[in-house]
Length: 304
Image 1 (cartoon, rainbow, N blue to C red):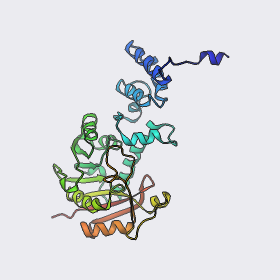
Image 2: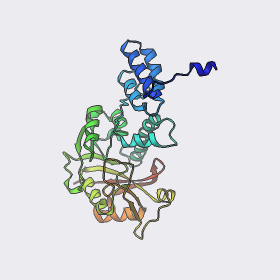
Image 3: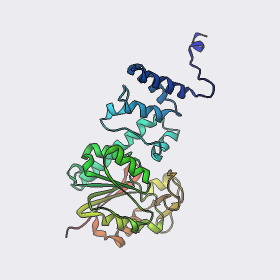
Image 4: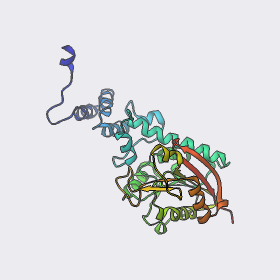
């Protein structure tokens, strides 16, 4: 009975999370930071106020902020489809932690991949993160290299603007048509995480050529694909060429025919590399390298 009497009941028309947000903001306004942090942390545990509470905690550097734990900017856009994927997935009991840890994991996996070709990430000049989204990985790349060495590009304008505003990186908008892409320069590393795992057959090789053109002489193009393991996991039947495409993905901002879900065999990828930029450009490949789910390929542009 006592436990029931102590239970907080939200006012009519207001969820429990919204009530906590209101209380936490008032405590913050009153200068009671410790009390506000406790209440807002509880609001962060409610699905409907999770991101709002997170934003307030991070912006005010309150106890419990991920910034204090990770030492980087942990601001998350409300339009971030990848965060939305974590927040809506039944297996994710802590979407904030899972989202931020996933970006850190990607940094580790990229570092290992570059070490395998003796071109360490920290020795790279300027890096282009292509199809960068709203910064799931960008924030970690900036911590490693500094914002001045990072450029991002995405077809969603808000994603580029968010990264520029939040992380201080350079950025430019991508294009729906590969040949319309206008890169301001060439890069020592072009990193393309999970774009070729979404491309229709009509643009797959065209994007490979355009992104390889963005690499400076001696530099690297790193890209990933959904390979055989991913296809088997999702019970996908590949065609005779080793390819499958479905016009749907986790993105709510890009048309499914332009950005769906793609699976390819290694043989398919190697054939496209050979016919598009030359088989001799491939210097390394690693099956199920990223997220234990996506295959990785490393191409080097010849010097001179």
